[in-house]
Image (cartoon, rainbow, N blue to C red; front, side, top):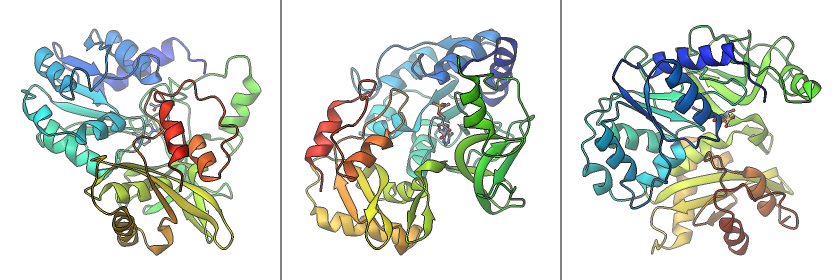
Length: 376
Ligand code: 7RM
């Protein structure tokens, strides 16, 4: 993506200051990889354009132990902390001692970015890191948007778990149906679009302007299409439901993966999960779930666990969303920014592992082999 200079800088500066409620002398820390847009926009440009103190960390959350983040928060008296749900879930799997050992009273605002934050992770973050005192800003945005587009303003917007809440001032959203019509009103869901340009929007794809036009501006007339699905609740809050190409059609029902994964993660033995579709003679597609347990040595009968997981799905979403196959695994293939590489999981579920494509940029390429071996 090609970003501009002034527009990109102004927008990251504006969103940084307001979404983190940054005040002079605060110490801010974003844990992102500097090579991810989150690192560009919110470790470097936004904070520095405000003259903020921004902590740069080179390391991992689990070395020398799982308390690393909280040790740094205490040491530098971090006021605003910004991380990804994948990191929160990884830490929430471990003993609470790692968090409770440190003084986190400097924290005023907690941020989340990169994927939908599931309810379990939201509460763990809120209870144990924020001690129910620091608002969580669930910030939705993309490489293409340059900066945050949907987020609560801390201490002003009441937060709601799993909701990125409201568009930031200046951002006008639309939900569109498959036929290209805008869906008005509340308690609806559709394809998430932006109606008007904003300062940090990417200007083109380097060397391929036609691809830029085609990808973002051809699906809906006069709209920027994000590729994400979202729902708008009764008060107008937005919840991102995942990429629309992740929607799976089971017996004619369109099922988004995020809400089902959210339900599974409610099970006390489950740390994380990912769902993909696979071909099914009767239903068209059926659901295949990859599930990571909190304790890898889980002694309980796995068939019982499978039943319990489907029971939770039935309660939260309905029997239509039950999984046909559940594979327990030690990890999921992820990019450096923590996004699950569903393309790979889909191929494994389809029994098509001859050509998995490029997996060299994965954080954990070894996990692919172990998932293939454990295929059910
Ligand atoms: C910042 C970043 C963009 C995609 C985006 C979404 C997903 C990002 C959230 C989220 C739910 C969030 N840029 N996404 N933030 N989904 N809630 N708060 O991640 O270009 O790497 O990815 O990430 O699907 O389209 S990105």
